[in-house]
Structure formats: structure tokens, C-alpha cells
Image 1 (cartoon, rainbow, N blue to C red):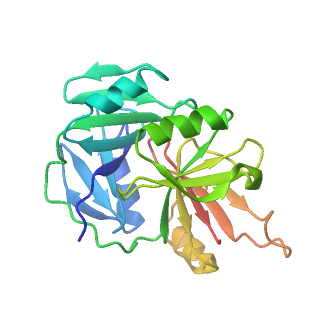
Image 2: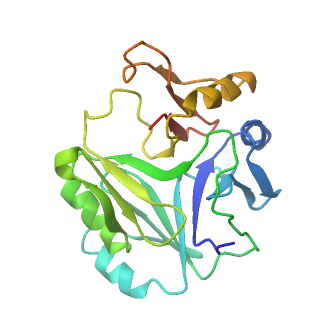
Image 3: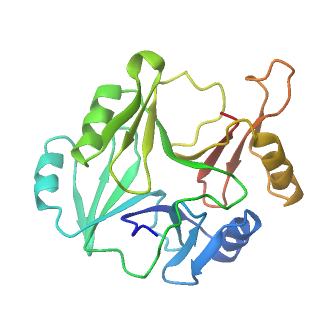
Length: 232
């Protein structure tokens, strides 16, 4: 198991409803309250019921001093007890948490929940250059894609990579950021499981299928975090 250094945070006004949502999607609950942590096997997700909580990414590191000095040149840094809050040019919030992640949360490296193979966070960006600079300052490095292709993927060694998308490239709803799952042509059984579990589908997508079959879907959890569950 790999020691995680990143957590995706979703907020909620109803912790019971949010727990039930992820249980229906066959996520494994690792801790009950304060914090409430779930996993699909490849990433950690925290459900935060605090009324000041916002959807975003938590990154853990012993010392952020050098990074903060660089970030102050490109964005505003808001200090809070335990860390720093920043936002990328598209409003995606990142919590820079001081110290190591508390709790013994290991990751198996294999997605075992209903949505399938987790592939990181997708972000739609208007200013691609500023967005890339922001994430590179946080240690993310390009792994795939290019601006000419309409998307670029980055990783920083944590369990949560990101993909930056150009505007008007994705012909569907876009939650910014959104969890992305790529299932290599095996999406239809996954969509059946989602329907069987009674999970509402925010959008059924047929635009990529010549026969008009719903082979991609988008979900939205009770706190507003989106899921892109794609057949790619």
C-alpha cells in the first residue's frame, strides 16, 4: 500500500446522505467522523460537513515555506490554522496542509468502487497558461496531452493527478473540478450498476456513440462534486 499525500474533499449539508451516497457506490469507509474518509482503492475522499468547507484538493507536506513564496507571486494565499488555502485561476480550491496526513490510510492502487478506474481530477480552464503555472508551482509535471489536443495531464507523485481541459472542448456538463473515471470500453455494465443502486444521473451522454447509446454518464454527489464516468 502507498502512503497517500493527497485527499479530495467534498462538502455536505447532510453527512448521513453523503455517506449513504458513497456506500451505494461501493466506496469503502475508512473512518466515521472527524474526519469522514472513504476510498475506492486508488484515492482518498473526505466528506466534510463543516459549514465553511468547500470542495477541493488537500495536499500534505511538512513545510510549504518555499512553495508559498512562489505562490504569492501568482495568487493570493489565505492562511488558516493547520495550513494555507489557495485557488487556481478557475476557482479550484487547494488546501496546503502542514505536516503528514494523520491516520493509517493505505491505498491498494486499484479502483474497487462502482465508478471504475479513477483517473484524477478534471479542470476546465480559460487561461491555460496561468493554470499550468499554478499547478506546476505545486510540483505537478506534464505526463500526457498538449494544448493543441485540447487537454493536458499532470501528476505530482500523489494519488491525485489532474487534467486541464480547454473551454468548449467537452460537449457535456462540467463540474469544476470533477472526479474522472476512464473505463476502457467497459462502461455499460458500470452504468447498469449505477442505475441498480438508485444513483441519480446528472447527464446521460450519447454524443460519442454513433448508435446513440448512453455509454458515458455524469454524476453529482450531495455536496456538488461531479463524477465523469467515461467509456474511454
